Amino acid sequence: NAGVTQTPKFRVLKTGQSMTLLCAQDMNHEYMYWYRQDPGMGLRLIHYSVGEGTTAKGEVPDGYNVSRLKKQNFLLGLESAAPSQTSVYFCASSSMDGSNQPQHFGDGTRLSIL
Amino acid sequence: GNSVTQMEGPVTLSEEAFLTINCTYTATGYPSLFWYVQYPGEGLQLLLKATKADDKGSNKGFEATYRKETTSFHLEKGSVQVSDSAVYFCALSVKQGGKLIFGQGTELSVKP
Image 1 (tube, rainbow over the protein chains, first blue to last red):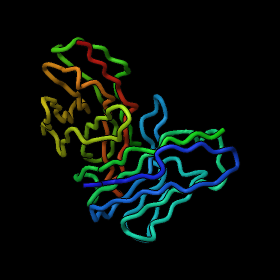
Image 2: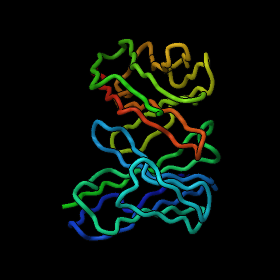
Image 3: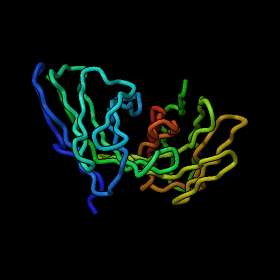
Image 4: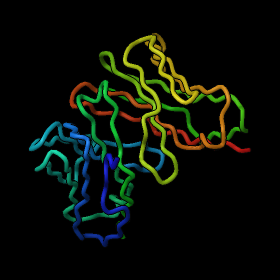
């Protein structure tokens, strides 16, 4: 009954370091999403994928890259971390076009950039 | 463009009080509307949804009606409990890729 699993849950980086956040879903969902959550700003879409091997930019894509090599996994990369990327990151998935199907969220990754 | 505006929080209520959290939206076409809830330290969970005008979504005593004429989707509950303390997000969906546009969230705190 895992649903959407995000790793790691917490991470502290220094400015300029790189890292990859992993999202895995076991619901055979086609669509996957990465959001960031900042105080007073709700959730903002970074990148999304409508199927294995596809990715697209969301509202705030700069400074991030993504890959969807396997249907169940969606990776978010920070090549050179900046303090402005300190945030809580959420991954989500949905079975079809989320206009009618709900998105299922992971528990988040809290990332601090010093 | 597409956007969602929620009433600002935090909202503090006593147990058994009536709850209203206002949500209005701007969208092209006919979006679906959602309320998500985030409990402390957790991800977002779908609370309820409505996919067309005049639909009423309901779950766990919460209700919201899709009002096209006022572009609103206000969340209501007749009697809140301490366990309802959480952050509530209103959202609309965009057809392309199923993307969600979120409001800024409203924090609810219910005191015994």
